[in-house]
Length: 265
Image 1 (cartoon, rainbow, N blue to C red):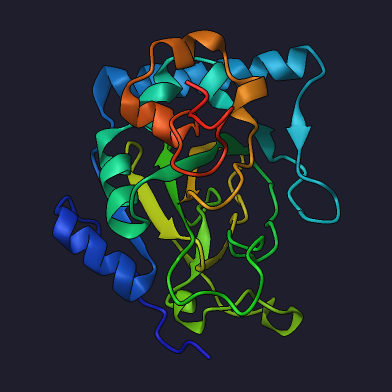
Image 2: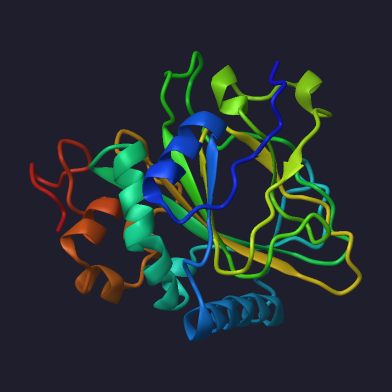
């Protein structure tokens, strides 16, 4: 069992971040979003969440999966505001994806989690539960969490079992009560963790704070995307996409997902 519970210090050095991902299963990169960009992105997310609430479309975690009744999910933020395109296809995220997963790769999903005061914890899990066991010895996916609020121990920061990626298996029932560490980071940070790391939403013990994060999930190109971009994406996103974006959306393909023998776009 994992005995080392240390997590890496925040770094803006990409070489160090990749080393942290290899050693710890995660990396913390501060100051990626700042100033007006951070404020506008945060406002866009909270507007989308409020819109879902007003229209009776809000999504909560399934009861058999979560204990956090305050946790609101905002699905497919890529179609909610162009600002989220800037996160999904951010140069930092793409560089990490290419280094960890290789290229081409896929954007499987990008959604948001907002946990409110009194919010409980989601169960411990790894993000590549769709991969049949035994798992390959390399990660099959990568999650880039954009911290739109500060992530703290008190307000429900994502918690993890550091180094659990080295076990190369999903958590079992007997692992549910393992000690976890809060991944604390300032607003504007990117928390990056590979798909084998065990993690969960933390318990929000504050009386008046919400904690919002946008989670961009990427996978190797042999897997189906979680979100069906061909049905759920606004057409203008694909219309004005770069070649790199089209690859991540599965529209420029290499052997999988072709249409009449060629890429759909």
